[in-house]
Image (cartoon, rainbow, N blue to C red; front, side, top):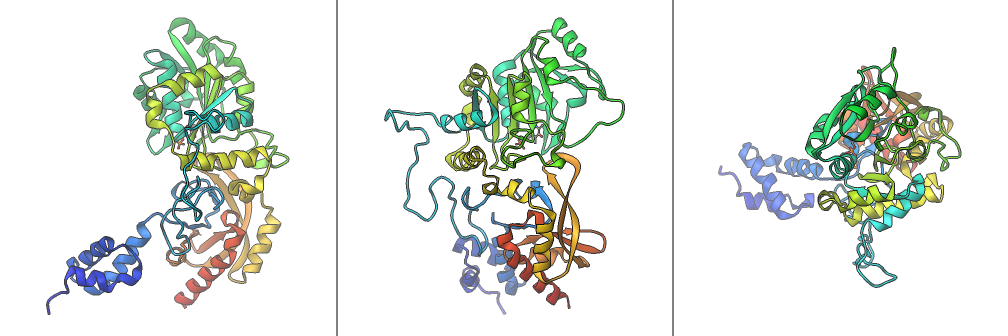
Length: 438
Ligand SMILES: *Cc1c(COP(=O)(O)O)cnc(C)c1O
């Protein structure tokens, strides 16, 4: 028997709900594999490869593979994806309402051209006590821009203990080279003193002293590092790449700082200690969309904004809209409106109650993590469900996918990273996984 034509087969699997050209791709793959009946599975596989929402039950709050900080519908809509999330992109006015423009680069008061940098600048500066702020696409871009704008063809002193690789190819020496600045290593891997930076500044043409938050690793034992306050007395301006982006060490949006954040430097305190600029990610401890934020002295922020690279690094209105929404929540001290903080600050009692209420599996104490390289090794007490055996694949196959953690003999569904509104969906996913196995 001749195999069906690609087009006929694509028409036959239309119930999968993908546009015809994608069904054709699935049909062609099934025919090429000699198994036309697998076309529906191929199409489902293709559908699940598209960007969509997922339920993070890993207990890792900022999961790098799951988009880091979770965002609520009020901040953004997940793009085309699974059946539970059909809404198109929608942060800045593109949701179910009428199609509208925005004042992205339009000054509503003067009626003249405005700046897309102005909206977030005021909010981020207010949140960190900075004179000014600038938003780019991610923290890697923020560091590159700062170095290119302020240190091109000049030296930048960095401690040998802070020449880090953050992951995803972000290595401080490489970023330095790309930006046209010259790396001047100071101190040693484990100990760097203010005097090491001072000696470099006296000997060399140093444009900046750069401190980089080691983020994803810890040096312990016989160690020493110079504080921002010490460095700010040496002479060259001090820039700190904070990475994680805790806005304020006192966490006024929570009322007080949780124990697991002890020692994490805040943007506000780092600037107050004498840094002229700080850089950090929008989607780590800030709990916003993927973005990079530069905060600090107005003239230096202006120099970054005026650099030609800014045109390549500038974010679009979807990101700026989501970031503004998160920034406004901080200014209202409304941690409940920021999913990351809502999840991070849930009590273990509350999580244990939710676990019991699911009515499946064994409610258990668990340990969650901040993730995204923030606070390495720092566990956050949590609770969830324990299931015998490895059910990860079957939970992942659910729609929407539920991403769990697997220990050697058990599957852990950690509820700290699950929105309570999804609890019943998680319970159903677990029930179906258990049924399928039995
Ligand atoms: C995470 C991190 C970066 C990179 O941030 P992205 O927003 O992922 O580009 C840079 N520096 C430090 C210290 C970091 O922790």
